[in-house]
Length: 108
Image (cartoon, rainbow, N blue to C red; front, top):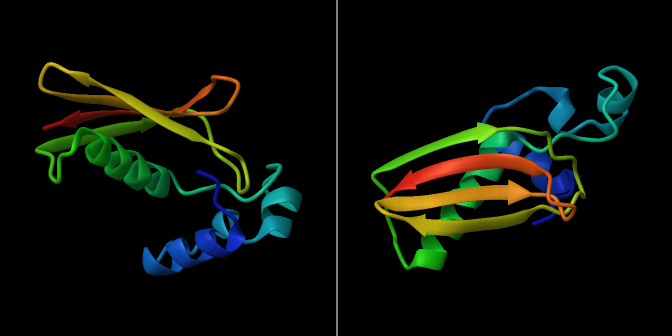
């Protein structure tokens, strides 16, 4: 998964998230001091949930909790992975070097 500024702007518009760190690279870099536009945590969580459910052939879940651990920046490649647990799925999003960006528990 790698998202660019257009996708991030559209997601911000759909979710009414007006914070400039999600769509204005100059502001994000020059004012907030980040290296690039920050991907919304809720967007990563949505992708994580949908990919995990699809991989298990499940269309619904009974619970979903997630924790953002490290920010993801526009254009940065993130790998979504998971494994089946007793009553659900343990999933995570990570960078290519293995650093975790988000963890999630999905009850199915």
